[in-house]
Amino acid sequence: MSQQSRNPLRELMDLQERMNRLFEGNLERGASREDDDIMRGGDWTPLVDVFETKDEFVIKIEIPEVEQRDLDVRLDENRLTVSGERRLSEEAKREDYHRIERGYGRFIRSFTLPDKVDPGRVEAAYKDGVLRLTLPKREERRPKTVKIHVK
Image 1: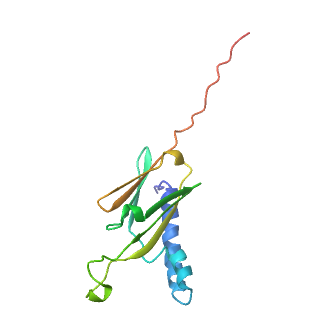
Image 2: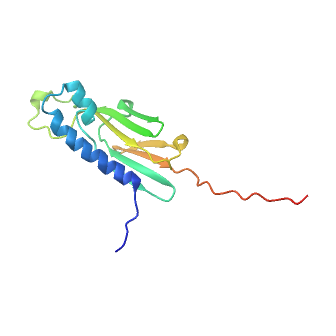
Image 3: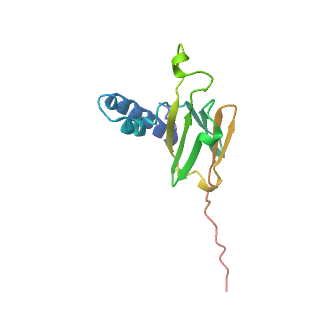
């Protein structure tokens, strides 16, 4: 029987998704709108890909038509939070639409980072509606050999 290697980041993300689904059902039954936004992550939830390479973790968040000025990326200890807002186009009034399927309004996504991430080197780039967060890993600390001098 082969043993799969553990992936702590994947386990945390799976747990976060399960918790989100659990709270979504409960919040629709009576929480205030403000509480709902905090727990559900806003008015909509952008899709996210997370993967790991030898040297870094990468988070790609799909947020087309969100202006860079409407984005906020914060790193607080081991928690990365991305929030922002996608506004309905001013081309037409809401009542002029026949169908609105895409999410609009505020969003927030938070990620607990593994200890391997070097928070001082995190980078964010926004291109073609995708926010790419690069989280370099810390250099591995190897035991240092101390040379013994004979006196």
